[in-house]
Each structure stands twice: as C-alpha cells, then as structure tokens.
Length: 240
Image 1 (tube, rainbow, N blue to C red):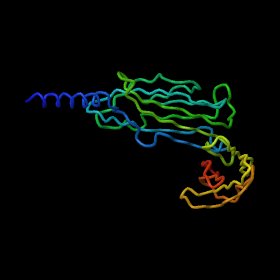
Image 2 (cartoon, rainbow, N blue to C red; image 1 turned 180 degrees about the horizontal axis):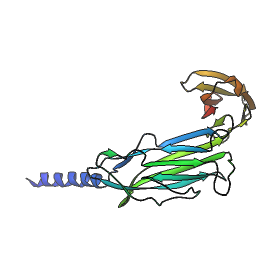
Image 3 (cartoon, one colour; image 1 turned 135 degrees about the vertical axis):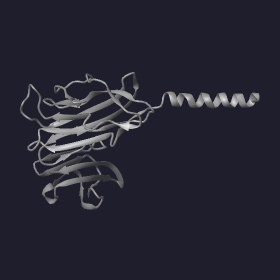
Image 4 (cartoon, helix red, strand yellow; image 1 turned 135 degrees about the horizontal axis):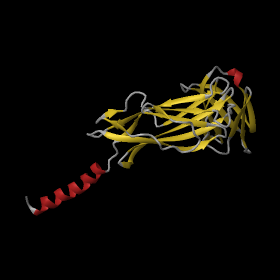
C-alpha cells in the first residue's frame, strides 16, 4: 500500500469510527410528541404507554426517568416500569430498576406505562389543568445514549384546546362557546377545518369573536387564523 492510500484509509477510519462509537442505539417506537385531552367529568386519569427499540447488536440495559416540564396544582403522575408501579408524584422521577432489551428488538409488552392524574394525595378533588412530562429512556452505562417522549395531558370540561402558535391570540372556552381575541386594526378571519382538512366554517371579526360550538359534532378540529392575508396562528381543539 502506497503512502497516499495509507493516508486516505486513515482519514476514512477517523471519519467512520466516531460515528459508530457515538451513534444512538435507542429510539421511541411511534410518536415522540403526544397530546391527550379528556373531559374531567368522565376521567380523572390519562393513560400513556410506549415501546423502546434497541438497534445495537448486543443487549442494552436501559433505565427510565421523567422530567416535569409543567404541572397544574393538584395534579400528579406515576410510572409503572418492568412490572412495578411506583407512587404518584409531582416531581421529577428517576428510581426505576434497569431492564435489558435484546439486540435489534423493542421492549417487552407493558414494560413502561404512566398515568397522569387530575388529583394528588393532598388534593383528592379532581381539578382542571394541564401537565407536560418528558419521559427519557437511557443506557445505564451511557446516559448520553437515550431517547425521549414528551406528553401533554389536559383535563377540561366540554371543549378543550391545544396551545396555539401565536401568543397574541387568546382562545378559551366558556360553556359551549369558543371565545377568540386578537387585537388588530385589521379584520381577521378564523377558518375551522375537520381532521381531514375540509373547511367546516369561516368567521371574520375585529379584535374579538365568539363561536357557538353546538354547531359542531364531537371530534377534533383544526383552526387557522388569518390577518392581512397572512396566517398568524394555527391550533387544534376537541369538541367533546
């Protein structure tokens, strides 16, 4: 092998070996961002589960932890991991035993699941509100090799909504009305679509407007708000 080929081989090895060494072997099977919304008059807890895939060529010993991004007062959550359910808490959690996933396999059925509660041990009465939890699965001997799932849980009455993309737009639900506020000197338009993307209704307004939700069947809907021919916000809400 001549000197040029030796140098070229060394460069290729230098480029390839780090990518092999530091590649991520764990991944979530399915969605990594999930929103679950329920009617608090019917449910006091929300169930979540997921699987983890090990793409390495050897068994991977993993653990799980949870970080609370936000949580309404009076709420809590728990984690069930490898056959054991741990006490509900409102704080970050990192207390599970390690579990081995075979090479090129996903975690076993019901290895992980979690409940988000509209109550806690000090507040037994269910309260409306929202929580956002980040669940992180990581190698026991290499925590930087990890994957995560962020779940948003909401309890509300009647119709409920997800967060909108524009902080200047305020939308809330008062019994059977959706109230919209967007301060502007120009006329704005609200477009409501069903989950298939079909336009259901269109309303024009200045500054504020109310929309009667009795006009809609139960289900999920998308909203687009337009001002001066520009889309200023999008969002989603459920009619329960």
